[in-house]
Amino acid sequence: MNKKLNIFFLVIFFFLVLVSNSQANLQEDIFKKFESTKTLSFDFIQKIENKKEIGNCFIKYPLLMKCNYDNLKKKIIISNGKTVAVIKKKYKKIYYYPLKSTPLFIILKKEKILKLIKENKPTEITSEIVTFEFIDKKSNKLKILFDKKTLDFKGWKTKDSYANNVSFIISNLKINNQIIDAFFKIPREEDL
Image 1: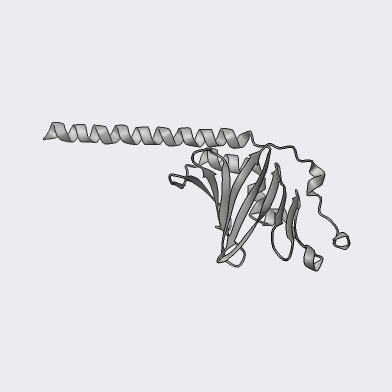
Image 2: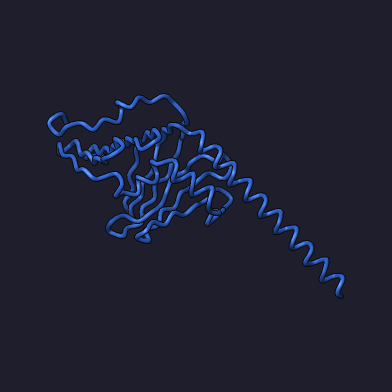
């Protein structure tokens, strides 16, 4: 009986070592792939509670982003590295926010995501997605998602300032295409 128990614990031990080693390799592979990423261009589906929006987006590290929404308001979100502008072309209106005060600051500051991957184990691994969770000083949570098979950046989940669940899921991802910095210039309202 004692021999069977020892064999059982030995099998469990080796299984746990194998799983832990596999997870560490996955984490290291995600880190290496994301570290080599300079630009991203992709389509997206954004859900805020039950409201769904689609569009396309361009990110250039560090801190530059432009997202075009396919909606009636012709919404565009641009980060120029310091400011996030939410543009509603239909109404010829621009709303400005300091980038550092938004969850986009973490998404657009590649070093923060790399540090998160390097220093933390994934909070969830499914057959399709690897999730890392960032919690800021105010206890706001931001989940960063990676595709388990391709190791590509897959999106993020968080809560907005009204405590609504927000998910931003990436598809048709293209990595390291050339994008010039001028593409991320915020227009003036009078030029809309």
